[in-house]
Amino acid sequence: MKWSLILFLPFVILLPGACGGGAKEANFIDSAPVRGDVEALWGFPGDGSLADIAGASEAVVVVEVIEVVGVEYSGPYDVPEWMPAAIAESWSRGLPYTTYRLGVDRWLKGAGGQEILITDGGGITPDGPIFMDGDFLVEAGRKYVMALAPNVGMPGAGQYTRRAGSRGTFEVTDGFVHVLNHPIAEDLQEQYGGMALADFVQVLEGFVAATP
Image (tube, rainbow, N blue to C red; front, side):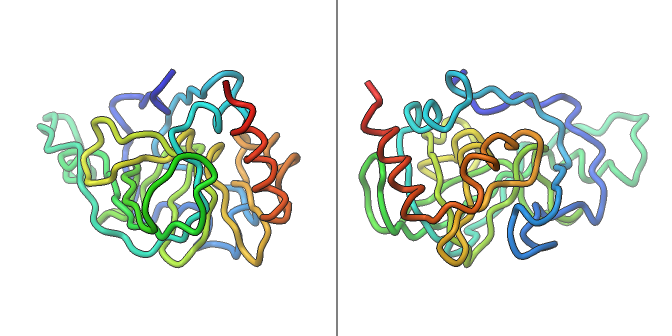
């Protein structure tokens, strides 16, 4: 599948005070288990390995998130008569999509400028943070390694979107790689969690070089 996920519809009852993706609750995204607010079926390139994700991505980059540019919604949607008033407003807005401006430290695959825009599913909404289960929200001021795909159809100005959610995005703090603490990325946690960034970059460069 080229597209990263398929949402269950209706998308979910959105709850105020939802989890913010992990980084706000702990120092690193692997410090505490994370569950998203919107259930999703994930599809990954090939066997879902990092090698296949890197090979299928248009770009792989080491970046720092500079700022949130804006949040757009998939709605407006009509509100069903049966829907409780407490969730009607959230439903009518639809799912959030956030555009981020990133500073690129290094292109491991692909090429481009020192800054790029990405648009991603999820965001900070009037109901609190909303994101897909098996994923997390990236944050301004934090550094990541990201696999990227072209933004096709998402509302927002990003040229790219993150490829494969938490299986294709890794937080980098103090020079070490952190993997989301979620069952969807357990194997990656065992393989790459705590790896020095320089070593992780070498692994990715090897995957990119081996791509046909």
